[in-house]
Length: 222
Length: 249
Image (cartoon, rainbow over all chains, first blue to last red):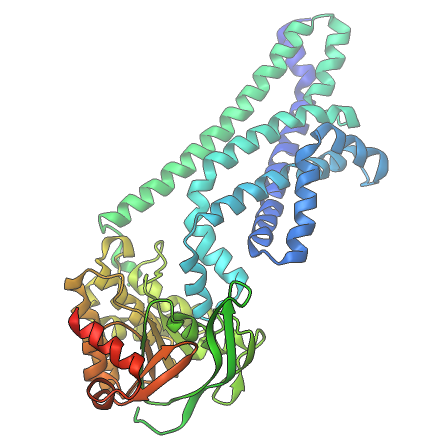
C-alpha cells in the first residue's frame, strides 16, 4: 500500500483526534480553572475533597481512568467516555498549575479586592487570573501536549481515532514502522500547532505589556 | 462632613488573639469611633493596631464580642456590605498592577457598587486630580513612584464614597522624601472632616490633624485624648515612656 493510500485510510481517524483534542483542552481548562480557584480558597471540606481527587488522578495512569469509566459508566458513546476520562484526569494537573500560579500573587491583592467589597469569584476572575494568565501559558502548554499524547490511548475504549485505524492498517500491511511513523508525524504536527499557538499568545501578551510600559496606549480609553 | 458626635463604629467586648491565644491583641476591647473624626491609633510594633482596624472590615475575624458599623454587626454575612461603606488604604498600596491608575480607581465602584462606567470614571478622574495625579490616569502602578501609588490608593478609596476610611500605616513603606506628599493629602481629608481611623507612626500628622489619638497596648486603649493632652500631658506611664522614646528618635 502506498503512503498516500495509508494516509487516506487514516484520515477519518485524524478528524476524530482533531475533534477530541480541542474539546479536551477546553474542558480541562474550564474544570482545571474551577478546581484551581476552589483549592486556592482553602475552605477545609472542599480542599480535603479535592486533595483526594488530586491524589487519585495524579497517582494512577490515564489508561486506568479510561478503562474504569468505560466499564463502569455509560456516557452514550466511546468518544464521550474518552473525552470525559481525559478531562477528569488532566483537570487535576491543570488545577494544580493554576493554583500554584495564584499562590505567587501577593496576598495584598486579595485584601485589596475584599476591601472594595468584591466577592471571591470577582477577585479570582478580575484580579488573579489576569495577573497570572501569562505565567501559566508555558506550563499549560506542556500539559496540553501531554493531553494530546494521551489521546493515543483512546483506541482502547474503541474510539476509532488515528491510532485505532493505524493499528488496523499495520495489521493489514505488516508494516508497523511506517504506520507508527505516520502516526508520530501526525502527532508531531498537532503538538507543534499547540506550541505555536501558546507562543503567539505569550508574544501577544508581552507586546501589550511593553506598549503599556512606554505609555503608548490609545487615549481613546480615557 | 462635620463631626456629628454620631458613633460610626463600635467595639463591644472584643477579644482577638493569635497563636492559640498566646498573643492577645484585643482584650475585652470597647470603644466608639465617631463620625467626622480623624482618629489616630499609635502604639508599639506588634501591639495590634493593624489588626484592630482590619477587624472593622472583617479582614480579620474576631474571637469574641461584636463590632457594629452604624448599629449593624460586622459578620461573615454582612462583611461585603460593610466593605462597600468602609474603604481601606494599605501600607503596601495593593494596587492592581495590570490596571491603569484610572482603572484601579474605578474598579471598585463598577464591580462592587455597580455604578455606570462613565459615572465611575468621572468621579475617579476628579479624585485623581484631587491627589495631584490627573496626568497619570493611563499609567500602570509599575511606572509610578511609591508616593504616587499610595495617592492612587487614596483616590481608589475615595471613589467608593465611603462613610469611613481606614489607613493602615500608609507611609511606612515609603521613602522619606515621599511621605510628605501622602501626609498632605491625608491632612486635606482631615480638614474636610472625613471619618478616618489612621494607624501611623507619623506623630507630626497626629499632632496637626487628629481629633483624638489613642495609645494601644496590652489589648486596650490605655489612653485616648486630643493631641494637646496626648503629647503634652500623658497620664499613662507607658504612653509617657512611648512619647519620650519617639521624641528622642
